[in-house]
Length: 119
Image (cartoon, rainbow, N blue to C red):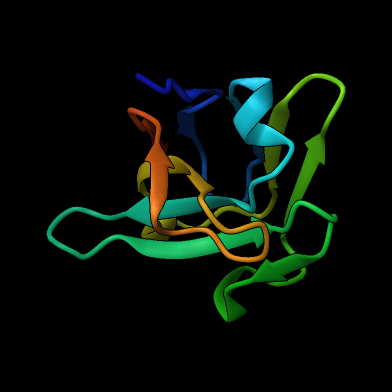
């Protein structure tokens, strides 16, 4: 069973920052587009950002300019730096390794890490 391991969630005040990490098996990580999804309470899971196997990044409009996705192929780890966080960005953040090198989605999922933005 493929295991993706997220870390870095927690409680942060509005306007604060967090960095999420996702570690994946190397055989999968290097050939996969990697993505971060968010599921807020009572809402559907949505794509926040993704990075292709070649390093091209893509962001949801709501996070552009505040979030940065990156990947370290030597460590088989993906990151999401989140700045200027808003209360509505509270939710469970899931890491995804896509079967496609250019797009996440269908593939493997982590267990999720909780992010709570609250004063």
